[in-house]
Amino acid sequence: MNRRNIITRLGIAALVLTAPSTFAQDIHFSQFDMQPLVINPAFTGMFYGKVRANAIYRQQWKSVTVPYVTEGISADLPIKSDNNGDYLAGGIQLYTDKAGDGNLTNFTGLISVAYHKTFGGNGSDYSGSDLAVGLQGGYSSKSIDLSKLFFADEFQGSSFVGGSTQEYKLGLGNSINYYLVNAGLCYAQAVSEKFNFVIGLAANNINQPSDALLKKKNSDAVLDMRYTGEVGMVWNVADRLSLRPAFLFQYQSSATEMIYGNEFHYSLTGEYGDTHFTPAVFLGGWLRNGDAAMITAGIEIKNFRVGLGYDYNISSLNSVSNGNGGFEIALKYISPYSVVRRRTIPCTRF
Image (spheres, rainbow, N blue to C red):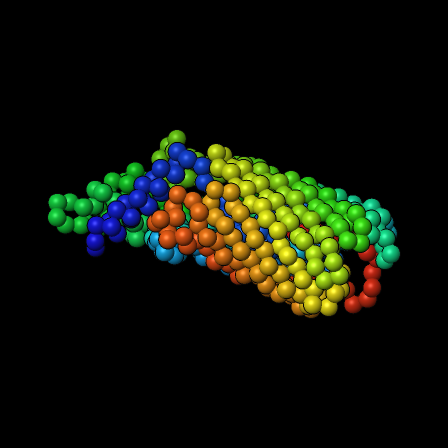
């Protein structure tokens, strides 16, 4: 074992042990519009179709350590509607996250419900809008493999004695389980046939559960509340071209994240369908403020949207990571209605 590996692993151990005095952070994706239920539970059911399914895979920091891998899947659908076009929607969101040499792993499962109040909108009227409130609850499990971590007091003279660290005696646990409660609001408006927007606000980890692996008395750390605001637009500037800018802001404890940019969307047929994805290609440029420059690209065809994303690190870790950041691949599927229905859902950015 070389000196660099020892220092790296000691650093990881130090981060784990100092976690009780800091705040844990939630996952994030560059293609955040491909995991709408992670961003805001009010987005549950906000689409035109019978069922929506999303999947995403993200890998980062491969050039520095064992790759951090985050995977997410979700499905949502309208459940019940009334004669006014208002409806109740439900969904499920699952994601896993594995980080570093110690396999710090998180699995989270969430159930979402949202009530949508719709205003106007029909086959020839593009001024429809949707106001939604969403609630989300679920279960999370976090674990770590202590056998893959190395501690300073395990190095005794010129030899290494694994499992001898005092940290085991102090009560460093292998896992912890807790429940989560999230809530959100959003409003979508189709201003005209060519322009629509959506704006949302959400609060996650409202119950602020204990998130500490260290089991000593008074060592508990909480998963702090995460506040999220997002704005997205779709502007059809030509028969085939639309601009799709978006802005995401997240605040948790002392950490902030700000992503902004634009997707250039080019329809191969000159049409924009409500019931399915018409053949199209897209290319986006994004900035995660102070952290990474990102590019996204992909295709839409029939009922599917496939997206690829790559982050180029521009933070202070650039020299260590050689600029490498994260890679993502995402898939979205929407099952269309079999017959033409009243248009009540604006074509939102998310």
